Image (cartoon, rainbow over the protein chains, first blue to last red):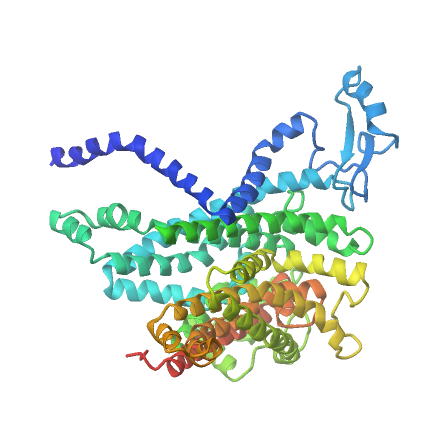
Amino acid sequence: MASTTDAPAASRTPKAQPRVLRFLSALGLIRESPVGVIGLCLVGFWVIMALTADLQLAAGLIFPPTATLMPLAFPGAEYIVPAGRMVLNQPVADVCQPILEGAKAGQFYCGTFWLGTDHIGRDILSRLIFGSQTVLIYAPLATLCAYLVGVPMGLAAGYKGGWVDDVLSFIANVILSFPVLVLYVLVITLIGASGTNILLAVTFASAPGIMRIVRGLALDLRNREYVLAAQTRGEPTWRILFIEILPNARGPLIVDSMLRLGYTIITIGVLGFLGLGLPPPNPDWGGMINETRQLMMAFPHMAIFPCIAISSLVLGFNLLADGLREISLRD
Amino acid sequence: MILTMIVVSVLLFLALEVNIESVAIKVLGPYSTQEQRDIWLQAHGYFDPLVVRYVRWLADFAAGEFGESIRFRTPVAEVLGPRLINTGILAAATMALVIPISLTLGVLAGMREGSKLDRGISVSSIITTSVPEFASAPLLSAVFVFWLGLLPGTSGMTDGFSILQLVMPVMVLVLYDFGYVTRMTRASMAEVMTTQYIRTAVLKGLPYRQVILRHALRNALIAPFTVIMLQINWLLSGVIVVEYFFAYKGFGALLLEASLNQDIFLIEACAMVAVFVAVTTQALADIGYTYLNPRIRFS
């Protein structure tokens, strides 16, 4: 018994290296689709922004996201601000250098509000950059959770069939019969708004959709020769599901995950917009739009930049999905 | 379908009404005394067994007795009715625009797959579906309300119904929605164009116009029908954001308000209505699909 379990394990380890390479070369394929490249660039831009946010803050390139500096400044305004208030209104280059390098270094914020500030004086650029961290942590995590729940359910339903399929499909149908946002609003108001609860709500609402897709794929794959071979070898069911069927269903799932990521970003934004998202001090794009839309008449920049940010990120994922689908159809 | 409704009602009941203490707090307010709560619970039969309470609750629901809204201090049905009509107007106006626009664009794009027109329509539909409503609403109102000053920025309808106030919400919904239906129509049309009967029609020497109008369209429009029916379900979500943004007094705004204020009976009624509409449109989509496509029969 020991030898039979060791043998495949030993034969898999040397393959691990080429598999990584194969994944990278598959990523390289995206170059063949111009739409996909644009999507990758948009997503990549925000990922880099999110990863370097703390570095940019440390290097003094951006203001701290929660500091209240100078309310209602228009884009491009230059200010030097000690301890939260404005004292001077002079060109930055003239005054900044001595302050940043002199004896009082570190006590002043000095720079330009490239995108202006919001109604209580927080720098919009910095909040956008830190907001991308929030979005890019919660959206992939929530999507991953939904997949962790939906994929096993779908595999079980599609492969087993019978009453397992009936029960799981019925549960999925019930959840999917709610209009999505109605479900989110109900769940979030019931369990309260916090990061974990957003993850829970997204998982609860999108796992059934994933389950349906996986179920369809598993139904299609369960009669293939390699599955029959595994059954004849007497492989346990979980091995057949996760080692034989799942890898062969990955193509459509990768495309779906990109679309779903974009959709989850919208969802998290909507929840923030409706005031059901993360609690206020966190920079959150949807919340930023909601907080500032009342003042849009006089200061349109406050709401417009977060709108552009969230749209560009969602667009990036959608274009990426489109590019990937185009490539997968070509093969 | 009826089974789904029943399960949903059980779920709602379990989620909202099992903890009777919290029901009493929601109805009587956080400053009510324990004694008051007990009297209220006793008077409304909350100490009966769970099953009895559920059956009575469901019977009340079926009879349209939703209880009294805590926030509005009126029967739920009175609040809900006008709101549903308002949302119906909004949804009907949106659909009246989405259906012709997206079908036309989808057919044009799918007619010649890979052409410049196709690429253009596909990319623009991806772009518009990537801008969520809560982003397109500020962007569009920045242009049309604040910059050009053409349209009113809110749709409260305080002095009676006004078409002009309907324009912005409908525009936002159409912009977000048409891309998806367009893509579905395009996919369906492109699939039909590769079939053998179209090739036969072309080889037969029929004019291209006739091939499209008489042979392709009829088959290509079956799949979008289902998608359009399911869009009604989606609209119920979409209206929450749009109604909230434009202060439109509709169903979505009501649901949000009820949820935020823990208005328990109003939440129950809104959720049941939403699910009822969703399940009904799904059933209609299935029935219509079998009617349009006789090759499919449900066993």
